Amino acid sequence: VQLQASGGGLVQAGGSLRLSCKASGMNFRINTVAWYRQAPGKQRELVATNDSGGGTSYADSVKGRFTVSRDNVKRTLYLQMNSLRPEDTAVYYCNVELWGRAFWGQGTQVTVSS
Image 1 (tube, rainbow, N blue to C red):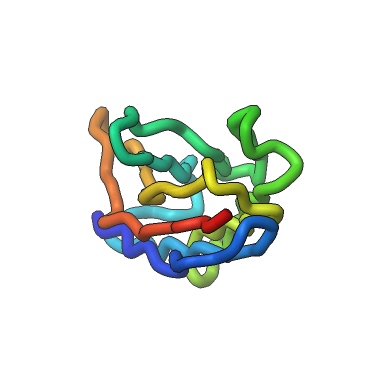
Image 2: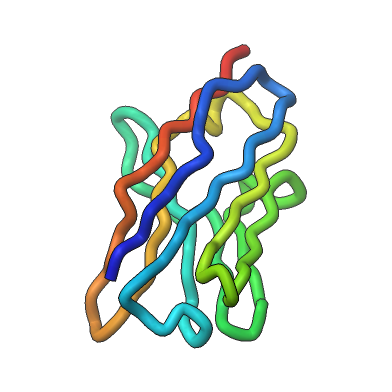
């Protein structure tokens, strides 16, 4: 299983970014995939999930600002991030849990300046 995240960068507060996570080596269509993030000195936290039926869930801190979606043909998970805040600064990781273990992408850095 490989998860390749991209799309991070430096943006001013109030700006937007779209992250992508390309999956391979797994049946993407039938699995729940997720975005996590980890800020310096903090624990990794769940940001959003997207299940095989298109159902989504979000951390309270990003509700109304972030949207998670997927393209099963492209085997890609997306995270549209709007109204970004400095506290959104973190490394963002995509995740899938298969066969009792967690698989992680390499992470993509998002930095929001004030």
